[in-house]
Image (cartoon, rainbow over all chains, first blue to last red; front, side, top):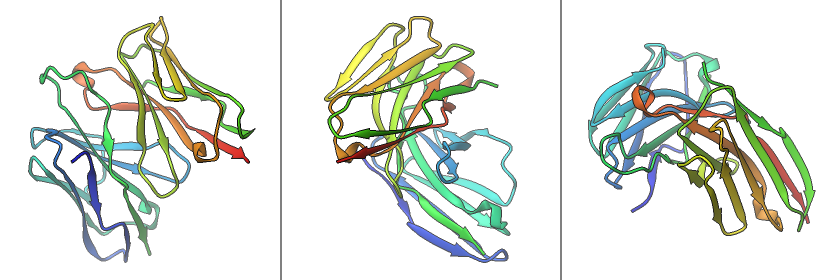
Length: 117
Length: 113
């Protein structure tokens, strides 16, 4: 299995809603990432998990809360979002450092298209 | 912080033509990656480069890791309509910055049949 699966594919939520984005991979990768991408712009890093521990938080507002329950799953909990948070949210995975694998190329999921109304 | 300058921003070409795009940086990277993104999808890794001077091919795609470690180019030969999409370069430094990719702004490729 060489895929990163993200659900849902599309999500519309109100500014007072609480929702979660889910990501799953079965490639044995122990590093997982959340990115935010606006139309025709490059992805912007939000969070990095390495061995299920949060290693990088790129000063993301607290209305975004990541969670890594196990080595295959990554969640992004959303609460009290703003319309400007509407974007494509991408999950990715890779081998972490220290594994002796010189493959830093991420595998990205297809993303969740989020619209905040 | 590190920035990647990717050019051109967009290209309009005829089917069968060759394409070239490049990225330059003010600082060095240890890995260069090239991704393609189709509308509504996530980026797909095309080529990964790990050594300065490395030249790697993947079908009609060829990419090189610049000898100074501050640049990379991607060539596509004999373009076809399914080459349409946005191409991103990305640099990875490693070490304490592990996990952080710096992306270029992207090259939007349009191929006319």
